[in-house]
Image (cartoon, rainbow, N blue to C red):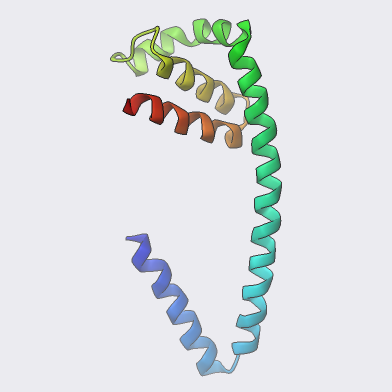
Length: 120
């Protein structure tokens, strides 16, 4: 549905810009937005790499096992079909920990990894 709505908004904005004679402002805003998008992507890339690395270190240490034990009752309630020894269990636990700590950018790769492990 969004693949219909967004192009429609873009087409309407171009038509409106042509009708009101503000085509130059549209061109300027396109380039400014592209520049902002690149800056934001570079910032998020660094942040995601940092926190993904920290979460990977936590995963290989005893911290991960301790956090998984703490979250075990919640995990059994939310995901009764997942066994405790399943790798998806630890990925989902780390995702929950990252979200609890407010590390939303680090939680995204963990969730994707959990989906990959679950698909197998």
